Length: 511
View 1 (cartoon, rainbow, N blue to C red):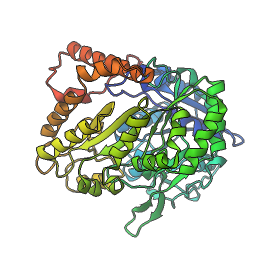
View 2 (view 1 turned 120 degrees about the horizontal axis):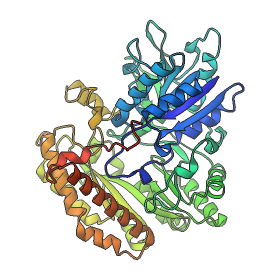
View 3 (view 1 turned 120 degrees about the vertical axis):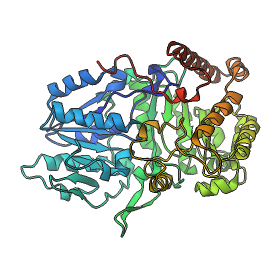
View 4 (view 1 turned 60 degrees about the vertical axis):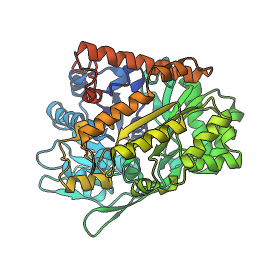
């Protein structure tokens, strides 16, 4: 059996460039690693982004490989159009190959992408390592019976069948090391300034302990229990690899592939204080000189500072954090199922860094356009952002991504359709609030960003005494200049806020 796992070509967000936008997709080497341990399975991985493989070249490569199974995943609704384009192409150029989709988007919308009119044979729902091995093995049988494989939905030629949910992997240490040798590791993280030098992604945990109503990240790694209405009941679940297992992977990336900067893609990196402490001590003991970025929970930062753990994390290489502050009002945080941030805990966490670890780059996100958003509530978000005074405050319109209650509610009320995903970029408002329409929210978003991301802000960063911070601001300056130049070339009115959501097509995209 020949299996090809593909990250197809995609357009990228306008505020990033090819040099920094193409970090390693964790699923690719993880799935390849488990498949190649199976006797009789030959695995190939094609990551089109760093390799600059366009649609025509990808079609030629698939024809050459002539695979039995082609798999691809997608976590972002924004790229659903390109994902379905890929599977349609697979059926055209490799008609005998079975097609398998996975990732968060297909996990939450499996019922939409299967049937006689769709080019996908099966969808992996949730965690994929065990599922893909069993499915490929079953497809290799003379008379495959996919109903034996937990955690999938498939089209049998007559109807869509959903099998029982797959149990999550209890011990993440049992998963083999990612197949980095099958990836173009030298092409990831080539940016001179962003996550430099030699940036790559990594994770130690899966899932989350919370279920924020605007977030679909946790759903792929949640415990699934079939409900009486046919819909799964999801329970948040968080699991972590051991420190020794993580160190083994880090040492491989550090010494064999020369990676020195790490982007931890864990939904919540710092949940477990025991892991945090042991990991920091092992990193310090190892002598590896690294810089790393992580999504961190504010309440866990406050806890770890009290325990004396945070100082060790900073010494171990922590250089950049992102905290989802989200809202200034506690009642809105409650409506978003983020009650654990009430009482100003985010401000406490950020003040700890500003007072004790000022060389760490501080990034915070704020969600605007919630159901009760008004000009008055927007002023509160601006006031909070000014009070927090982080290195980079990012304002994002609430987006009803599949898998969230916000999506279900918006769909039921007819506020969105399944055709709207091309605008689900967390830059373009797609929902009205009770007091503002989406265009008023878009203009407010534009005006809010201008208050923070301006010449004064840029000059402050470019003159920072901290090399990591200077590099980040140089990167911001380059991106801003590129976007402005692109706007001039396209004759876009700089006052037209809608141009900011336009995806950028790489030169090699259609080749």
